[in-house]
Image (tube, rainbow, N blue to C red; front, side, top):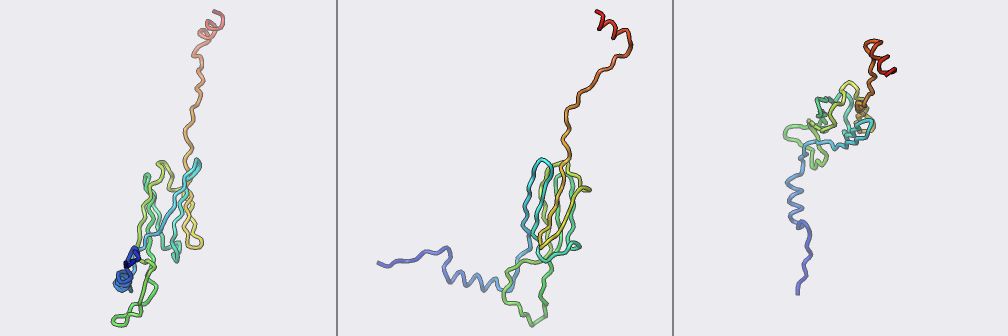
Length: 148
């Protein structure tokens, strides 16, 4: 009785996949986290190798859009391509994240540190019920109510 070992991908298929994908890079899609609490929405986006001037941020209604480009860092020469394997992703990107409605685009505090773009967006204060005081329009109505 022969025993066979089952793998998710046979070794020959793994090797074929590596050969077919050598020298190619996928599209760059930076991962993002969105945290929301009572006071703000905070967004963290991994953008390694980018500078602040490489990134555009736009907030319209409840859609936060982050655009930029992670340039290909290696020289490309016709006929002499030293690239053998590229696993990191490069190129233009655009991420759109749905955030709570009512956030003010002018209030976004954006910073970039160690390859992580951090956006703090304060939430507007929720309207609170307000007690309305009623004033008498003439003195007679007030006297009648008090003396009656």
